[in-house]
Amino acid sequence: MPRLHAGHRALLRLVCKPAACMDEGELGVQASSVLSGLLSKLGATPVDESKVFHADAEDDPDDEFFSQRKH
Image (cartoon, rainbow, N blue to C red; front, side, top):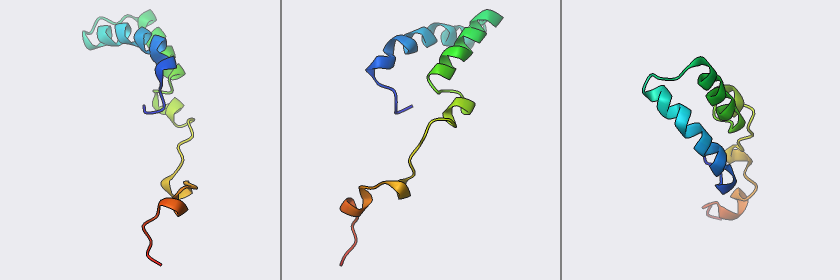
């Protein structure tokens, strides 16, 4: 998730504990719901990721300045 920055640190820390419990098979229903909500806030679920705008390489306005075209 390359769009995350230092401002997301606290939220990422909250994700770590229930994610570790899930890896150990010890994640209850309530903790699962909390983890799902946190991941959603980070845009880390497939549904939420589709809502985040990802510019296509073709749409990059800087391409004209950095292209390797020979004239």
